[in-house]
Amino acid sequence: QSVLTQPPSVSGAPGQRVTISCTGSSSNIGAGYDVHWYKQVPGTAPKLLIYSNIHRPSGVPDRFSGSKSGTSASLGITALQADDEADYYCQSYDRSLSGSVFGGGTKLTVL
Amino acid sequence: QLQLQESGPGLVKSSETLSLTCSVSGGSISRFSYFWAWIRQPPGKGLEWIGSVYYRGNTYYNPSLKSRVTISVDTSNNHFSLTLNSVTAADTAFYYCAKDRGYQQAGRDAFDLWGQGTAVTVSS
Image: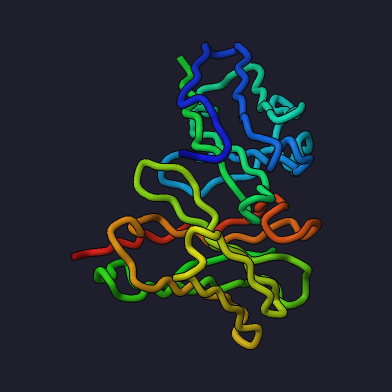
């Protein structure tokens, strides 16, 4: 059971918009710690998509966006493309565990 | 441009010690204020932070693994290492080394550079 909860799967048609939620608690997201998002294509290493809740690293398209409110965060992907199909993970810090924690991951299927 | 590369045995016997090294190329491990981390992923499962090390040797571990883990840094050879004792089948995973962005305390920042990962299987 992950400290951060993500839906196991989401799906959308090409061109549509999807959101992936990441729900934590008052000891992690709700305590004000940043949330980061990664994309992992099976068989490859995770790639940073969003850092510090809302920021995109250089090279990440503006189709990807992040938001945070209370004890939750969300990753939004607009104009879905076939190569968006991957696993997505959120990450934050938990003060009770004194360490970094990840969500269980969400598999995005592009229909 | 910094690059990370994991190395180590792909097969470890149960109850023995897993040892991996992450070689850093393209820059000095001690030049920047980054935390260097180990993260693992069991087959078909999610990511788990194992721990992080600063170039000065300060270490931070996942409490669930703390009693069995040692992460160290070797600035002379520009690499950092992971040792995990008394392994069991539950330690079978893909092991990644990574660096954080360097703007926050250990475990709080995003990991913006990852190695390609190395598969470790614990056999009985």
